[in-house]
Length: 274
Length: 294
Image 1 (spheres, chains in turn yellow, brown):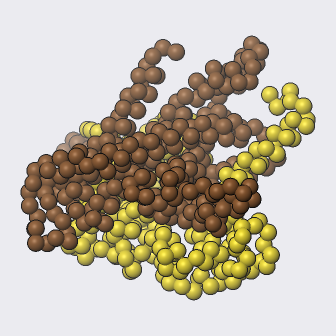
Image 2: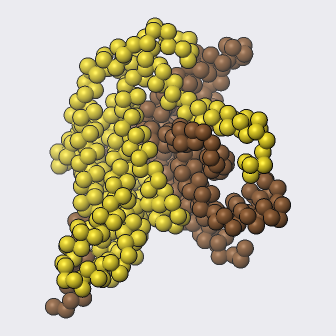
Image 3: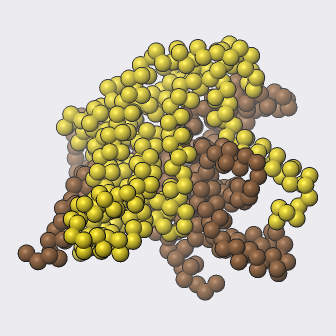
């Protein structure tokens, strides 16, 4: 199709595509630009950085933000770990095991992802208050693990289904135990998919807002909660706002780039080819 | 014990911890929410206590005008965002489904908003883009000597739609692009031999072939769009009034800002029912469409 197009037309098309992409990403790109401006140069809006500076980054990192970033990091990493450790065995049991109602179990897990978090928040809040889990790292890990285990099962199923049954059968003839075939054959073959699943859960937990704003105050507050209160607490310091935004957006965006190809296959449950 | 039974027990044992955690965090609370929806419990009025009032909370909700406004908002936001995401998703996928210098960078630029947290997406748009005095909105208005659009007043619902579309179009692109890339070359070749025009070929050949992808994207999009909360919280706070509140935000406002726990729980139950109905309806519709001979 492109071959038939004349050369100037093709170049024009490519330029157009680039413009569309840059405009789409403009809020993020402009956020990055603003983060290097001095607070006095932020207004009026301009693409030019008159006096490039790293002061914004230096100054925002002095606030309580380091504590909050650590909270988010600990909660996200621990939740990913717990989700995978609890979730992948379920997928294994669903795909290779001999469960009587494996389809029902799978759909039960899936159905929980359909529920809006608002449907559970009041009881969870009360439960956390009674048990002392309110505003604790442990409480947040518990809630995020419970919410994301279904995502892990949903995502990893299509990757485990891809493991050829014959390989497993031949290994069980060899007499190697099921445990060994799980760690020796299935995990390595499904590694890519499981890692992407972990990355996705990390992104979801790192970015999660609703549970965090309702269940944390100071102790276990996470990055999204801090960001939401930034303008009320720190005032209209847009350059600093942009600097801190850039820092906290970077980890999920980079991980997202890494995981994007497997995401398609995992999220669509193999309903479409990735 | 027989081998089969042993294997079944082992499979169950492997699944049990996850079942327990998920049940504790999602299933038990939802039953509890249903129970709460039947009581009157206003936290800031301890003198009233917690009393069983049957379906009165539901009656209250269905009598209140706010509720219908919020349901309508939710429907509007969902339909408009999913339609826009689908259209832009197809358009961007067509752009990316070819080879040109920097195609990977362009793809990265378009995908990135999907991974940005709601809280940051919301405040960045609110401050540096849409702010009517200091953002680009105000800048362009003064450039063209017009009044800046009021994104947080009359157009607040549109603001929510714009933000959802900005975040979720990348997700549609990921799935739809995968569809275009999997079209067998024979299909395209035969269209070329027929001499079908580009647009006709797109509408009658390529899009029908990837319909499955589009449906999956829309279905998953629906699940997530119905849950949107953070974007609203950090941009319009559902206002002015309830003009940009959706059902999740309404539950939050009732239960945590109004402290009417019972009533909030009732709205939550209604939200769950509406969510399940919407997803089931869409799913059925897609199934039926596929069942029909092409």
